[in-house]
Image 1 (cartoon, rainbow, N blue to C red):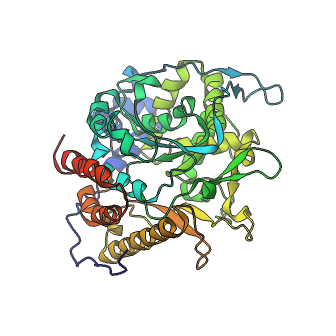
Image 2 (image 1 turned 120 degrees about the vertical axis):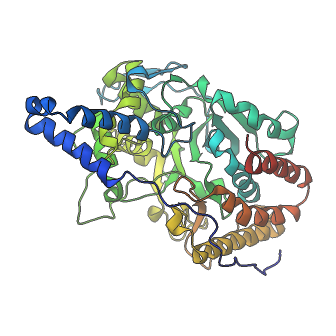
Image 3 (image 1 turned 180 degrees about the horizontal axis):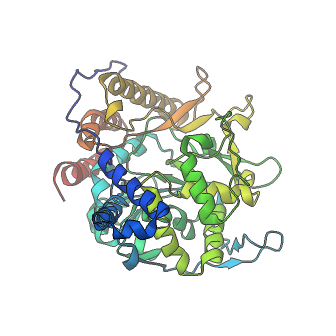
Amino acid sequence: MSSKYHMLDKSHGHVKPTTTITKKIKICILHLLKGLLNSPVTFFKSSCSIIYVALFIIVLLILNGQPKSIFPPKAHIPWLTNVHHVQPLECIADMNQPGWPRPVLSNDKSDMNLTVVTVSARPEFKRLPVTMAALLSHLDSRRITEVMFLVPPQDVHLLQPYFSSEQVKSWPWRVSVISDNILLKHIHTTSYRLQMMFKLFVAQIVKTEHYLILDSDCVAVWPIHVEQLLHQNKNSSLYQAINHAEGRSSHEKWWSESERLLQIKLESCVSYDKSDTDIPTIGVTPSILSRTIALRTLCRLQKLYGDEIFLNKMANWALWREIFGYMWTEYTLYFLTGRCTKIFDTYHTDNSALSSSNSIARVELTGFSIWSHLDWTVKNQNKLIESIHNGLRWRQKETDEANGQAITDKSTSMHNLFAVLQGRHNVDPKLYHQYFYPLYIKYLQQQKQSDKLILILNNMTRKLAINKH
């Protein structure tokens, strides 16, 4: 394909200022807490206490779940929340670790294949044309069992036209759109926590030991081959997934809150040394999870809080602390479980542990990304375009010389597979579509038997990215 690039002009696009909790609201909340702790009787007799209490409750309901939620922006109402699972979570006692029951797993799974799961909803569908064009360009269909979209039941019909029984014949991998209510039924919660819960509960229905979790803002920028993501353990027949490691210190409040939810002693399973930020833990989406560890995490919570109660416990856990950044996350719960049960290294490997003589190139799941409007600069826009062009050029080389199989790029020791293009922090996703979608379409137009797929993508663009739905 052509090596000539067209760089962006100096237009930054339309970017709104970031919305944050105002300083006054924080002061009010701190005043409330201080008053309650120092003199609860006097505080409640205060003439302004009712105002502070009302303000605190309003802020709590409005902020929790809405800012980062992919679901419709409705208030999370803790006392009305009701979440229950549809498929029973079957767990059995582990005699060696009584506090950590094991999930009952079916044998109809593949250890060497991978499932790709995107948890999404209507507000995020406008991103899908870019996301899918990038996956079509880069995701090698070999050893991919399924590409799955997990969406709310009321949104399924919006995606069905592009993945109908007739349309799926054109896609290179099996694609399915699944209603999330086959896993969890929920009312009066549209919080961010629900999205995180689905990323663990989807382990109940995937047909592979490992599954790659994506959000709608994860855009592939380099060829993706399963053999670079799953490595066979030399001492067993099991496969280990690469882990996108981050230091615990980058999100310490998440870790401590997850330890509280799991009822384990702080730092007992995952240590935290402020002087050493390189102790590897786990990152954020995109991430590859093990079905075994994900379900064992849920089994632990079910044992602690009860069969149905634990789901509401997860949904409502310490909501007031979330305002100050304390919240459990799916990945911290997952990693803590893996370390506490000593099975994390059975199902995962760190890239740094892979032999340098390995003929398979090392990859990281994420690299350079756009996290907020502050990152959306001309320099970074052009850097992304350059990265996309380089990835597509290499993918073309693999197609031409190796029938689409991996070719190791020996000019570098590492490649990043995805860029996260966030829009929740006031970068209009239409800008991402405008700048990056044409690059992938141009590549796809040069590929054989891609006409139907391009037509599907363009229809998706008209209905989801341009028109309001």
